[in-house]
Every structure is written in C-alpha cells, then in structure tokens.
Length: 432
Image (cartoon, rainbow, N blue to C red; front, side, top):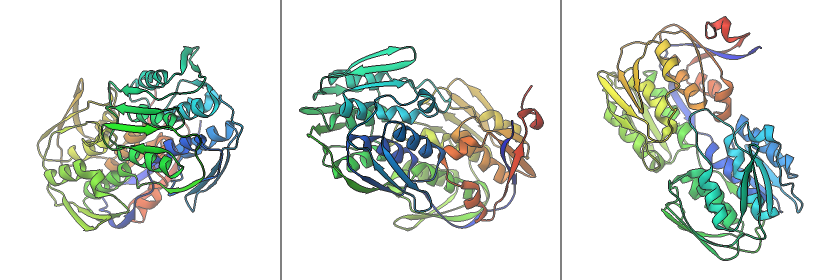
C-alpha cells in the first residue's frame, strides 16, 4: 500500500524564527468537554492535526455540529440538546483521547457505550483510574466485549483519590464532576498545564473549579454549562521538539509562542548538555548549538518533571553528545521504540528494562527508518536533520497526528525535506 514518506537531506543547521502551535494535549480534552454544554463553543489556537480531525469525527458522530477552519485554527462546536451516547468503535480505537468523552457523556446523557481506546503503542495505559473515579460519583460501569457500558441516575459529588496522577483520569473526572450534584474533591490529581487549561475552559462555561494545577482539585457541581470562547495554550511538547531541532542540527533558532515555565525541566537539561538557551522575550526563547554537547542523565516523571513526550527527542540529542548518558523512563513501559530507528542511523544505544544507555557518537548517517509512534517519529526526524546524507522516514502518519505541517515549517528554517511515496516497507528494507 502506498503511503507518504519524508526524505531528509541532513547536515544543514537550522536558522530563523518558528512559532509553536496550540497544544494538542489541551485541545483534545477541551473539545471532548464541549459536550457538557448544549450551546456554541468557540475554540481558538487549535492545531490542524489528524488527532483533531479524529476528535471532530467523534463529536459529529454523537450529534454535535462542528465547523473547523484550519487556517484560522478555530473550531466551533454546538453539541445541541440531543446527544448520542455511543461513538463508533472504529473512531475511538484510532486515538486514546477519544476516551475523554466518557465523563462528559455520563454527565450529559446519563449513559454511555464506549469502545476501549486506541492510540500510540507505547504502553498499556489502563483506564481503571477513570472508571474508579466515575464509579465513586455514582456511575454503574462494566467492561463487556471490549466496551465500557455505563449508566447513572445522576452523578453526585465524591472524594476521589487517584492512585497515580493520571492526566486522562483527572480530565475525565473533572469534566464529569462539573454537572454532578454536590462537591467533588479530586486528590493526587495531575498537575499538567493542560489540566489548568481545561479547568479554565470549563470555568468560562460556568463551572466552579478551583485548585487545578495543584494536587487537590475542588469541583462544585452546577445545573448547566453555557457558551464560551477560549484560546488553547501553546503546545509545550512541540515547543521542546522545535528547540531540540535547532540544537541537534547545529543551528541557531528562536522559538516563539511558548510559556517558559512549562519547559523548565527541558531548559535545565539543554543548559546542562551545553546548548545555548536564552529567554529573549517573555514568550520566545533562542536555542543554539555551542559546538560541543556533553552527556547527561535523564529521568522522565509526571509534570513538573521531565516529560515522557520529549524523551525520544532528547535521546536523539544525547546520541550526539560526548560521553555516556543514561535515560530512565518511568511513565510508559514501552517508550523506547524509537531506539531501533536511531540505531539504524548509527546511534549507539543499549536498552536494559526501563533504562537506555547512550554512548555518544560524533556522526549519524542517513538510512531508511520507520516511525513507530508519534514522538518516535519526531525523534527520527530530528536525527535525520543531523545525519550525514539522506534519510527516508516512513510511518509519518504518526507525525501528522501531533505536529501540524512540521516539515514545511522546518523547511523555512533551512531544512531540506521532501515528501516521498513508499509502496511498502519492503521497498525500504524495513519488512521481512
């Protein structure tokens, strides 16, 4: 089957300015939470991504009217008064974030039938925390035939403790609690900026949420939520990816439309590895290669620790650093799938359980590689920018899920990237 590939001529330092798009991981839960209202919701700063298109399809399948203007990065969602409670399994299985309609549908419709979610194959990511929290609020939930079936005579406030600060569970429970009777106290909640953005969005609709961004969130239920207009926060993972592209390519770039506070762990590690990092404006940071990169150790953690979604890209940088680095992954058990591709390009990486040991090398060399998931695709693209010769990357549908026209935007910084066509993995020597 024919699919697109990226053909990258490496060895060209990137230079110039590039603007970060709105956050994918904020846009998707906010779009799902729009179902809590019957009125028109206007969202600005929503990036043009495959995952956004999938969520639009999910909302439309439930009866919502959706209008997306990709160039303006604006979405209008009008859920209306009558919603279906069962999105098509094929849509939900395409993307894990589809599962975020669970809480809003239970709150609005009182029942739901939802396929277990799909998405990147980076780990099990169980949904039990979602179900445990919603059950505590009075939902009767069962897993049957690969689906979650649930109903409730009306959600009620509860005190809920999350065994792990799951972002998705925090979002689902917080959204559902906005329309529950009484007060919900959510403890050990996730701290991510996307949680705060969702709370701000819900409050703009009339919800009463306090404490978002701390470990304890209080949600006082209200009768109904109304219309609103909201601008999504910048994407901190894309911002980090762009910064790393400048350093890995040996270049000097300015990344705009960022919130530096969201990126403290990355900025600290970039400085530690020897990169030039300069905050030139409140929302813009200059990053550049100093010529010599030093090995550092890295451990992923829930926010405000180093984000797992930037671990593959940072590992690419460490593959070019002098010395030996150790990367420890604590969030997802299968987050080293990019190692195979990086190794094909000449990186020296050995995986031992949750640890990757990287022996830095001075040079990577172009080769055919395949992106196994979203962030692995980003890591391979960054590696291709630094590699000598030509790299052809297949599986770029994963990149399209989370980065809006990334190859075009990097090309404006000097990168040489073309779209190719691949008949099969066998043609690239990637299949048996």
